[in-house]
Length: 386
Image (tube, rainbow, N blue to C red; front, top):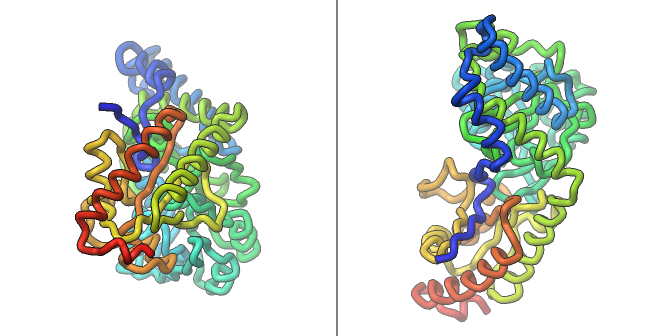
């Protein structure tokens, strides 16, 4: 049976070039990067090369890159490292749970949080952020690209608001990295998070940009690794892999590969909307990253469709992978104002570098027939779609 993977927002396959870059640091150059002997210095050299590569992708100094275990740790470090009891945080209602759950915990610890809304396209209004400012506001945290819809947020405008108010600004760029150009100076952010496994590096490695002069309290205590911001022996193979993935991502922003993914995504969306009744694209009225399509299938249960498509070799999801198995509907789609039934009928399709025209053809061949079969089994009649 043919296997097609359309769930790249959940995780991406490690590219062969990335694996080859990290292989020596698993088998040969296995030293501790903090050791002063030759084995350790070979490992340190690999870490610092990777740091420069990540810095180039982000548009910052290498000294402003701190390696972490992934996007969740980077997001948590940004929030818990800045905010204390009595401080005020502004974030949005559609953030990843790495931010939202951290914000809830900060509220329990005595911080206050404002969750600004989004419109029907899933966009934050910068004026809502401005209106939410208080004397106690210490940090604004807004994602760059939504993980479920791919909608791009107006982070440049929000960055200007933060600068004018002299408030720290954190951007969760986990789903934006490698999909749109990143320039921390243009965004005017103080902190920015990325995750390796979203850009074809392995899981359990990520990074956070920390602008020079930003005072950040560490969450982990031990050695003086990562400028004393992230204690713990460095994951050298993972960091090297992240560096190589960052280089490939930077190349992809220049060589037209992103445009190709966008063309595949657009053809896929047109095919679904043309051949399947009762469908629509969530967030279609806003700018989105090129690889993501979030589509509702009226009169269907999304999880049933995910399972049925998996049996045909097509891997898709209902939304964030960390929320799979949850019974509640997507907080992102709910914030956008989707009716409960429509939110529960929405599927996320996210393409990647490895996907081809043949993959799109296969998906368009199996989805209409699968949807039709599931709808026939549903107690909802065909008339509901008319």
